[in-house]
Amino acid sequence: MEVHKLANSNVSVLKPKQINNSKNTGRSSYVQKIHRRRLAAIGIVFALVICVLGFQIISAHQAYSKTVGNIEVSQAKLSKQKATKHDLKIEKSQLNNKSYLEKYIREKYMYSKPGEQIYNLPDSANTFQK
Image: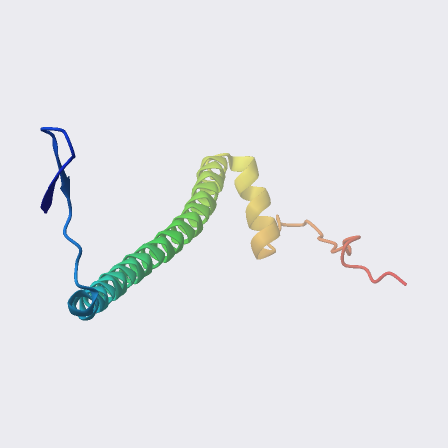
Protein backbone atom coordinates (compact mmCIF):
# COMPACT_ATOMS: atom_id res chain seq x y z
CA MET A 1 0.00 0.00 0.00
CA GLU A 2 1.24 3.40 -0.88
CA VAL A 3 0.42 6.54 0.98
CA HIS A 4 -0.29 9.74 -1.00
CA LYS A 5 -0.90 13.11 0.56
CA LEU A 6 -3.42 15.37 -0.97
CA ALA A 7 -2.31 18.89 -1.82
CA ASN A 8 -3.06 21.50 0.87
CA SER A 9 -4.51 18.87 3.19
CA ASN A 10 -3.53 16.82 6.19
CA VAL A 11 -5.42 13.83 4.81
CA SER A 12 -3.48 11.03 3.20
CA VAL A 13 -4.98 8.52 0.80
CA LEU A 14 -4.05 4.85 0.79
CA LYS A 15 -3.72 3.31 -2.63
CA PRO A 16 -2.84 -0.30 -3.36
CA LYS A 17 0.47 -0.98 -4.95
CA GLN A 18 0.41 -1.86 -8.58
CA ILE A 19 1.28 -5.49 -9.01
CA ASN A 20 3.83 -6.57 -11.48
CA ASN A 21 1.74 -8.67 -13.91
CA SER A 22 4.68 -10.67 -15.25
CA LYS A 23 5.35 -12.34 -11.87
CA ASN A 24 1.76 -12.89 -10.83
CA THR A 25 0.33 -14.18 -14.10
CA GLY A 26 2.34 -17.38 -13.81
CA ARG A 27 1.41 -17.79 -10.17
CA SER A 28 -2.27 -16.94 -10.68
CA SER A 29 -2.59 -19.40 -13.57
CA TYR A 30 -0.97 -22.06 -11.37
CA VAL A 31 -3.42 -21.27 -8.57
CA GLN A 32 -6.33 -21.45 -11.01
CA LYS A 33 -5.15 -24.85 -12.24
CA ILE A 34 -4.90 -26.11 -8.67
CA HIS A 35 -8.40 -24.81 -7.91
CA ARG A 36 -9.79 -26.50 -11.03
CA ARG A 37 -8.13 -29.80 -10.10
CA ARG A 38 -9.48 -29.61 -6.56
CA LEU A 39 -12.94 -28.72 -7.83
CA ALA A 40 -12.83 -31.62 -10.30
CA ALA A 41 -11.67 -34.03 -7.56
CA ILE A 42 -14.42 -32.87 -5.21
CA GLY A 43 -16.97 -33.17 -8.02
CA ILE A 44 -15.84 -36.72 -8.83
CA VAL A 45 -16.01 -37.77 -5.16
CA PHE A 46 -19.45 -36.18 -4.85
CA ALA A 47 -20.66 -37.98 -7.99
CA LEU A 48 -19.35 -41.31 -6.68
CA VAL A 49 -21.10 -40.79 -3.35
CA ILE A 50 -24.36 -39.93 -5.12
CA CYS A 51 -24.06 -43.04 -7.33
CA VAL A 52 -23.40 -45.34 -4.36
CA LEU A 53 -26.28 -43.89 -2.35
CA GLY A 54 -28.57 -44.04 -5.37
CA PHE A 55 -27.71 -47.70 -5.90
CA GLN A 56 -28.43 -48.42 -2.24
CA ILE A 57 -31.80 -46.70 -2.43
CA ILE A 58 -32.77 -48.56 -5.61
CA SER A 59 -31.75 -51.96 -4.20
CA ALA A 60 -33.64 -51.27 -0.95
CA HIS A 61 -36.73 -50.30 -2.95
CA GLN A 62 -36.54 -53.50 -4.99
CA ALA A 63 -36.20 -55.60 -1.84
CA TYR A 64 -39.18 -53.78 -0.33
CA SER A 65 -41.30 -54.38 -3.45
CA LYS A 66 -40.37 -58.07 -3.45
CA THR A 67 -41.30 -58.37 0.23
CA VAL A 68 -44.65 -56.64 -0.33
CA GLY A 69 -45.38 -59.05 -3.20
CA ASN A 70 -44.53 -62.05 -1.00
CA ILE A 71 -46.80 -60.70 1.74
CA GLU A 72 -49.70 -60.35 -0.70
CA VAL A 73 -49.21 -63.92 -1.95
CA SER A 74 -49.01 -65.23 1.62
CA GLN A 75 -52.17 -63.35 2.59
CA ALA A 76 -54.02 -64.82 -0.38
CA LYS A 77 -52.90 -68.33 0.62
CA LEU A 78 -53.91 -67.65 4.21
CA SER A 79 -57.40 -66.50 3.24
CA LYS A 80 -57.81 -69.58 1.03
CA GLN A 81 -56.74 -71.85 3.91
CA LYS A 82 -59.13 -70.07 6.28
CA ALA A 83 -62.00 -70.63 3.83
CA THR A 84 -61.06 -74.31 3.54
CA LYS A 85 -60.92 -74.60 7.33
CA HIS A 86 -64.36 -72.99 7.62
CA ASP A 87 -65.81 -75.39 5.03
CA LEU A 88 -64.29 -78.39 6.81
CA LYS A 89 -65.75 -77.26 10.14
CA ILE A 90 -69.19 -77.01 8.55
CA GLU A 91 -68.81 -80.46 6.98
CA LYS A 92 -67.65 -81.90 10.32
CA SER A 93 -70.68 -80.52 12.08
CA GLN A 94 -72.96 -81.88 9.33
CA LEU A 95 -71.43 -85.35 9.63
CA ASN A 96 -72.89 -85.54 13.13
CA ASN A 97 -76.37 -85.35 11.51
CA LYS A 98 -77.52 -88.92 10.73
CA SER A 99 -79.60 -88.07 7.63
CA TYR A 100 -76.76 -86.05 6.07
CA LEU A 101 -74.30 -88.85 6.81
CA GLU A 102 -76.54 -91.43 5.07
CA LYS A 103 -76.91 -89.15 2.03
CA TYR A 104 -73.15 -88.52 1.91
CA ILE A 105 -72.30 -92.22 2.05
CA ARG A 106 -74.83 -93.04 -0.69
CA GLU A 107 -73.47 -90.37 -3.03
CA LYS A 108 -69.79 -90.85 -2.32
CA TYR A 109 -69.53 -94.63 -2.02
CA MET A 110 -72.63 -95.73 -4.04
CA TYR A 111 -74.28 -97.54 -1.15
CA SER A 112 -77.98 -98.31 -1.01
CA LYS A 113 -80.53 -99.59 1.47
CA PRO A 114 -81.64 -103.21 1.10
CA GLY A 115 -84.27 -103.46 -1.65
CA GLU A 116 -83.57 -99.96 -2.98
CA GLN A 117 -82.91 -99.39 -6.69
CA ILE A 118 -80.51 -96.61 -7.77
CA TYR A 119 -80.74 -94.83 -11.10
CA ASN A 120 -77.98 -92.59 -12.43
CA LEU A 121 -79.27 -89.73 -14.53
CA PRO A 122 -76.92 -87.47 -16.48
CA ASP A 123 -76.48 -83.95 -15.23
CA SER A 124 -77.44 -81.07 -17.47
CA ALA A 125 -73.85 -79.76 -17.22
CA ASN A 126 -72.39 -83.03 -18.46
CA THR A 127 -74.52 -83.37 -21.59
CA PHE A 128 -73.02 -82.35 -24.90
CA GLN A 129 -74.59 -79.35 -26.52
CA LYS A 130 -74.73 -79.11 -30.30
